[in-house]
Length: 275
Picture 1: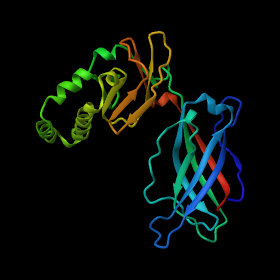
Picture 2 (picture 1 turned 30 degrees about the horizontal axis):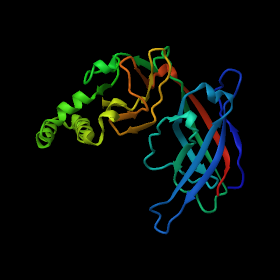
Picture 3 (picture 1 turned 90 degrees about the horizontal axis):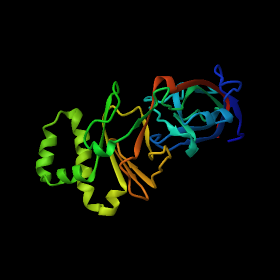
Picture 4 (picture 1 turned 90 degrees about the vertical axis):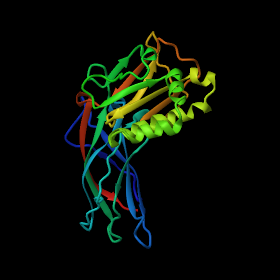
């Protein structure tokens, strides 16, 4: 890559500032068969305004062409997921390879920024969940159900013969089976936890369309954040491990995408030097 350049996002500004988008890297991979060929454009928003948001993602890639006019859009464009900004992971756009004779490329699309708050409907605080195992905790009007599982509820399920449990899962509608399989995997893994571990671990599961869930956070009775030491997330099950025992007064904070929390910023990048 010849240069690292800085570009301005167009058309929308935050307060008095225009958000800047920096090109971090362009990587191309070419194989003899062409089966593994790709071009990845790596970008990073910079500037003070980034700190006003919590998550970002590539919202849409409208077009991508090289200087020879070759269309670089993939046949099956991917769906991008939100990235937690403090982690500082860069944004990546996956495209088809450019022409060997092309010198530059151009990309047109948009970035989605989001800062969930209680006011914009992006944050839902749920108290007393420790006393509500296997009860739907999700707010009204969403496309998913959220469940908390404690030691007692999982132990009760584990006492049912595995073959019988799996037979019951197979009787469910196909749309429900994936959730049920993951809960069974959670139950089967109970033997790996000590009594002390279970007192420091929280299990949540989401049934339905959970694509708008950004993540879970936790706070104590005084509103102080309680950070887990590690997290394990599958398609349906979220497991959080803590240093200390979780008190009944702990609140779970559901971060989710809401229309009022999202800012869409178009961008046009031109003259990107190919490697």
